[in-house]
Image 1 (cartoon, each protein chain N blue to C red):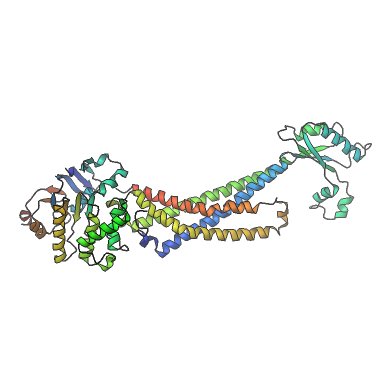
Image 2 (tube, helix red, strand yellow; image 1 turned 45 degrees about the horizontal axis):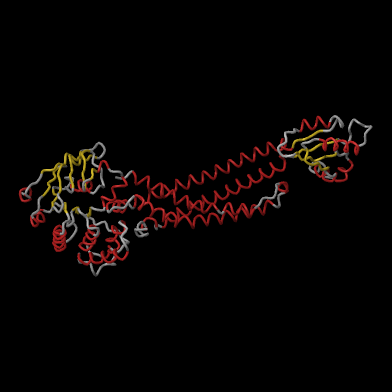
Length: 297
Length: 227
């Protein structure tokens, strides 16, 4: 840098301005880290659920069918035979009765009562990737041997939930955008304030032949110097809050059905936030100063 | 010609014209006083010459370049060939005399050893050899003005503009500054010295550009205008 770094020190080292810039960046990084984590966690959840239901369907064979002449094991055997004969079926797996009973747990808490009920037999089927078989077409084939068999497509169960998650992901992305916008506006206002204070110095620098870039570089230097502490403080605070939240989630019964999230990957991703904030502050300072200088003669 | 102004006018918004129809030329190595009563537009005219202000009318040809046709990023190279001395010195308060005077050389990308050597020699020449590392607040008015002069000439400018340079200094410092300007002019630097001090104009006996209510009435013998 050709000019001394201390050129605009008197304005930038003003205690209130220092704290204002550090606080704004800390708050923005805190919110952005939160938004980023929520965004990434929800995206991961969507992908996990999407993958788990994408090629899976469940065949249900009621325990009390209308073909009283045919026992349940025979009905299952015939169903499996039809399924194995279908070219689009990759694999089949009979869901154990205990697992089926667990599905009733929210409604029937007494395990003995659940055991006494005539539980249907569930067969989990995996469709070959790229296959166009629908639940309806498979069901039609099964009904030729077991007339009351039905097929459920998992995707249709989860579609509403996935829509909600996707909406939340957009909301998190919007929060992230908002944090960036507020950061930009704050830096712009701070640059305006400093430029107003240092008007004579800026005019002097122009007079002695400084380019707009020479002047902007000094604002960038101060933006970097002040944004690092703010970014790191905001990130540390957000990490602490997220750590506490994830700890609390373990004790929420409703959270047991949420697939495990790769916290390490998420942590790596969110570590980008303070770095991006510092780069953002740096670029905002440059853009703001160049824009303001452009209006000067 | 070093500088040619053609029909320059300056008006802020819809207000009264600050400058009207100013036309003159300066040859390399010339020395002119720019004089007139307070509020006549001397500082505004200097600001136009050192490209801190865009004229509302007319055009400027500086060092052979038509300023109106130049892009913004081309102007700093021209400004580096002009030295400016302000009445209020405009030294940066937290930089030493040496650092203040060295600013134009740093902007020009000069080597550090050259900056240190050349700036120290120059400050010594203006009589500040023992105050190199003093902050402006610890310098007297005359010393601050000499530090500002060192900054203005450190780049060996073709044109030196001084706005009331002796306005804020005592009589002895004013004499010393006048001598400095004469010496610089002898070395080939063209000088425009804005002042309303008639005794200074008479002492140096150089041509004057007389401004009155934003108009140039030139050249008048200083004694005639003083009367």
